[in-house]
Length: 161
Image (cartoon, rainbow, N blue to C red; front, side):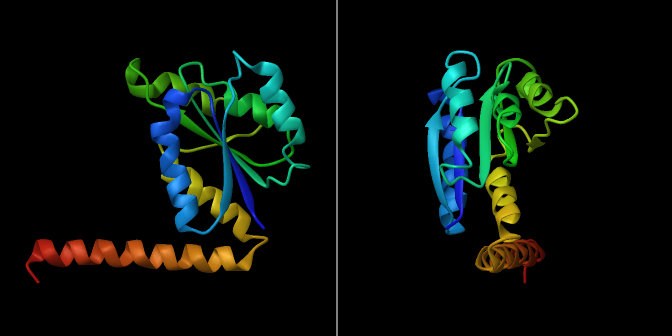
């Protein structure tokens, strides 16, 4: 069974992270959510990352704001794919978080979605898992067809059809 870890640097990030949980539920993917801070609980964050693979996780989503080092710390300590969600902050609308997540050194990649891009993080996690799990690929294709139809329906409403 595919399993995603969702890690956030602070409980205050949960409003954004909840959208990842909802999308993973919609796609039928098991997940576990934790609060771990790269700066306030560094040992626990590293321990989680070191054990994530053996604990059955296959993809990790890491959300953090401001200095936003969580995704990088996790990626430095696991062979699993890590997807970073930069959280919007009062400074420059989250540009600080975005730059912290996206500017990773060679050898420590973090796939990064938009500021507060929680839904896309979950979809990307599902797409990564779909390489191994064909049923997830089918679910993603159904989802993409659904959003396709929603856009066409919106277009028709605007046109008065």
